[in-house]
Amino acid sequence: MYLYIENKYFIEMKEIILIIDYKDFFKNKENLKIFEKYKKIDLSEKEKRTIIFTKKYIYISSYTNRALNMRMNEYQRQIDSIIF
Image (cartoon, rainbow, N blue to C red; front, side, top):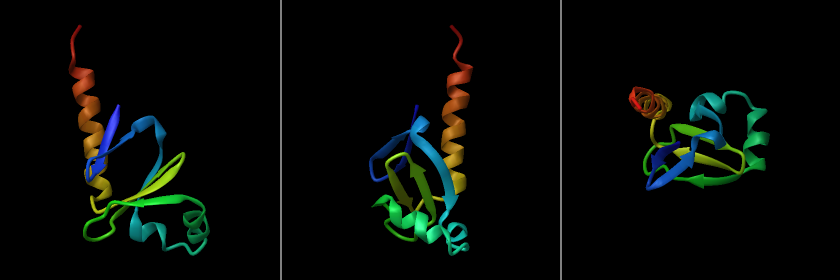
């Protein structure tokens, strides 16, 4: 299963470690050290709203955390509704 995050980027859902609000993440000063360790892909066209941690990269998206979670849940609901 994949999650569309922005600008034609899809991430395999099993690769996702954490999805967190951009501003909430930086409320803790210690998180800056973590942020600097990863390679970053900034996809945000407007405001930076969400950080998506994967095993290799940090993706920065202008989509909200809620919108991304709704996409993941919608895909799962569709998979669960298929009758074989």
